[in-house]
Length: 174
Image (tube, rainbow, N blue to C red; front, side, top):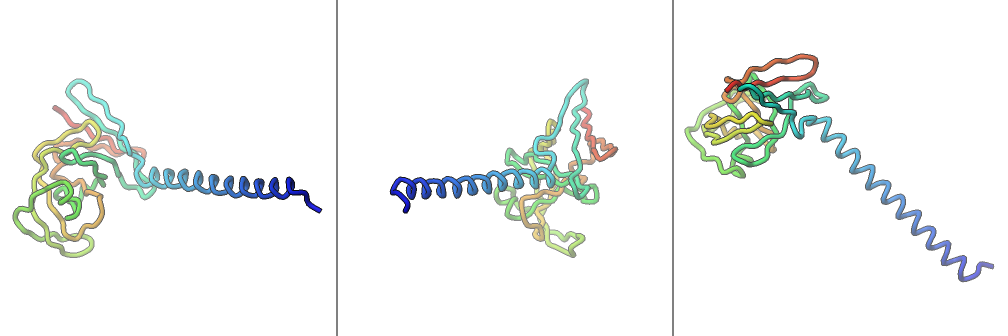
């Protein structure tokens, strides 16, 4: 027969085993979530340096061979996808509303996903690492969802780009 002490010890042991499994699953979930986030955007805090009138940012490409990096538009945190094939910086309507961008002239964009309606807008300030651009032409692109921003040529036109060994070096000369 089991004594009262052995049954309470057995119950307590089962509780600790279950708590250990739960803690292990939570720790694995946090680890893999962080791992996947870094695979998608290895440039959470882009490497930057400024010297002798040149500001340089170096981006690592992600597992899909894209250059994705965190930055700011008018002080609001965003995630940029460098897209040299895009004419303008392109922002989805929900993010544009969050940032407080005004919709200007209506237009049409011809994208890989088809034709979509756009609105001209201006970004007071765009920042990627230590590179800072002011008064950047952009478009609010109705066909875009999510919080990613296509960093197109309206921002990149005055930035020197060098792609080598899975890294994109961006240089802004002052």
